[in-house]
Image (cartoon, rainbow, N blue to C red; front, side, top):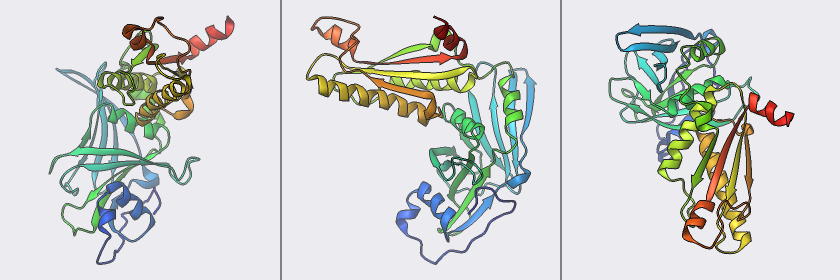
Length: 317
């Protein structure tokens, strides 16, 4: 099945469908792409258009991007200046089944990255209401479109049989002009000043190999900033360990933590080719002494942003 279609696609399926496939909507989407599931697909095809509008009300301005999905409804990104973004897919008649709806981003066949597929998780869906996503998922979906990926939302059909699914595709065609207008709509998408996010320190407990909640929140903020700042040229991620244990183990630990941070940023829509991941073990300590406080300070991953103006300044020195 092509990512882009100009008409509704209906395919017949066998009477029985493997329950393992149906247990994962990501697998379900891929199965529909390749073979015989019964699918109702709505897609604007090569006629896709994006529209930008600015709405003013008593509660403030709203910056809105919309795409009509023929036969189904409207995809919408909407946000207020200085605040986060919300994504919605609303319909003339809700055809998606109860529960979450899987979002998948895929490069079309004409895209250099084809056939890469990215799972974006389950989006909120209330029966009879829109499919929705708040930050940071909304910005991730926005940047998928900015990078030329089509978005397909998939679930079992609300009204059909158990082997029938519904899929609505949101096209990246003609996205750039509307996206540029959104970026200039009072710079709503800038969640912080550059000075506030230029350098961050992510700290870990001894032996910890998961991101603390505070670290995830900080990285989500960094991702939103990077996605909005067109002058960004690189993100430098440096892993460090304390001096407890053998150096070879500390080097590996610092690498795993640095890659953990990098993977989180990629999941939030940051292009991996923007990242520079390095790891140093217990070298480059910021605190000396065999104390708990010194070890706490040294167990860290630093994230440093570089934008065009700072890159020029560094090259001039």
